[in-house]
Length: 252
Image (cartoon, rainbow, N blue to C red; front, top):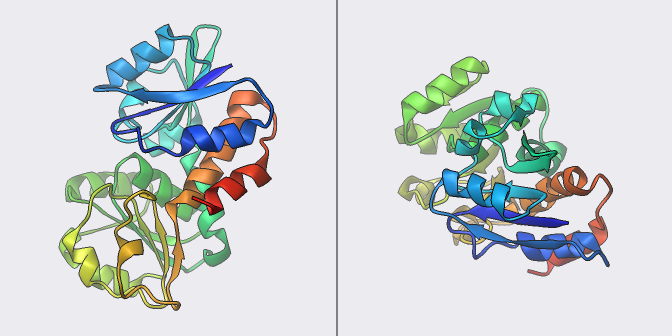
């Protein structure tokens, strides 16, 4: 079977190596699709013989307009990161939701305050994942209107980006999903917080010199790992070699 990850940029992705670890001795392949548009993603998925693809930024929201069958979860989130081809039809799923929950579950729960930075495909999945663990969720975004619209639909709170430092101070868990750096983050205090950062290649919070042992920092590599486990189950309808996947993640 043939699989890939689609995005732009995508050449840095750990997904091909992670899935090779998951396959064990299988002859299945997993490659890269670097596309200029969501239309190109869908065209290549349909025409190049892929059985399934993972979708990363900036296409997680856009792909929903091109699939034939959506899952309830990706409809609620408004984004998908996993597409399957079944009998000529494209099915979409969102495994980011469970990927986030697996990362923050030990630290989440009723009454915990979660701040999600960013309201793109990853941010929306993270917000609903935290809400699913009964946390109090606030979403901030460069476009306040987008955050407010999403928050209103799902009974969450939306905050202003200008208030980011105060919101971080008031939160127990911070999930940063922005692909690029935000100057305000460099001035925030994360002492005593749990932090999950989606960008595992160029993390902003993870590189800050004042991140101390009192900050529980979770690399986006673990988000990648847990969402990949669910994607593998959808792709192959069997369990991956989780220990090999974990070993790979812990050594990159």
